[in-house]
Length: 108
Image 1 (cartoon, rainbow, N blue to C red):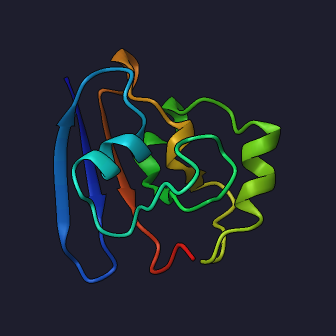
Image 2: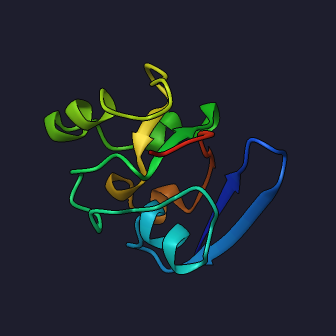
Image 3: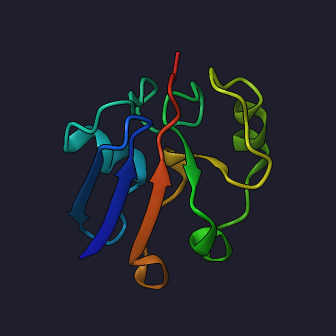
């Protein structure tokens, strides 16, 4: 099991335990995390699962793909150069068994 902590802009925090292989977007939608919509279902086509990954976890992430990079230019909340990612493109793995992300104020 992996642990994902979602931080809201109002200071509220939700921590969920999920199976390895689950994407951040799927974990948020399944657990009713406010602020993550996942409108396209995880296809990197809508940017409604935009998150800002907290600094200690950045080095454990896979590289940003060309499709993800393009969608990050379309987010409702300004992109953070190194911290912005699409939750649908980050899967928890054995090497990323814990991660903390900030949910932007708006997704649409």
